[in-house]
Length: 230
Ligand SMILES: *Cc1c(COP(=O)(O)O)cnc(C)c1O
Image 1 (cartoon, protein in one colour):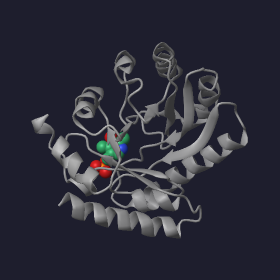
Image 2 (image 1 turned 90 degrees about the vertical axis):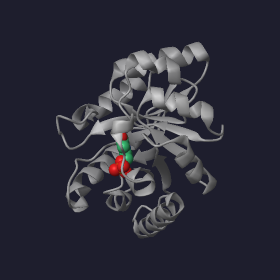
Image 3 (image 1 turned 135 degrees about the vertical axis):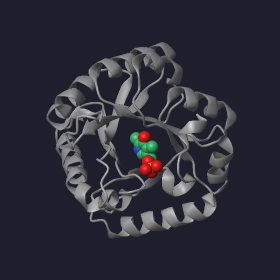
């Protein structure tokens, strides 16, 4: 099933990317949280190399069991006391939304003598339940983080509100794209806006249309998650 699902998802991504006015290259991050390593291997054998997990503990146990050339994306809320476990092991941390968290990542990165690539998570919808920095505060946070020696901002990430019609979240994706263009224009040292991480199973076509180049897709590839087994 996973192979067939992937085929469909990749074809839909391709189609959306060809239509997008931004002509961006889109990378699929297969969100494997709650799913076993055997499912990940099935996607890996189909050519997928980018996988997303939202919990540090689950990520750590999977990393050790899977091929070394996987690029791991941490996409969930990250607690400062867990940072030490993942430094040097992720390709990209998508969910940095405070200076204190970025400082902790910097401190641990210095210890391990590595540079850690991150995205700043922005709460574009203003929903109180969503993590992410408010968009009004995003630019000042980016400037503060840019002064840290061992952290590199590579772009922005957002999670859109859950809606029945994905068109409803188009304005939020557009806002994040515009914010990344504004930040890029500031030419801040040590940062780049290479990645725009937005779009999930329900809304990735709209996200790509609005400029996403990293889409985080779980359900459409691996099926529904069963949290009772966790
Ligand atoms: C679980 C998760 C996804 C994937 O969601 P699906 O709807 O299953 O595609 C994407 N992004 C984040 C941050 C997630 O936690």
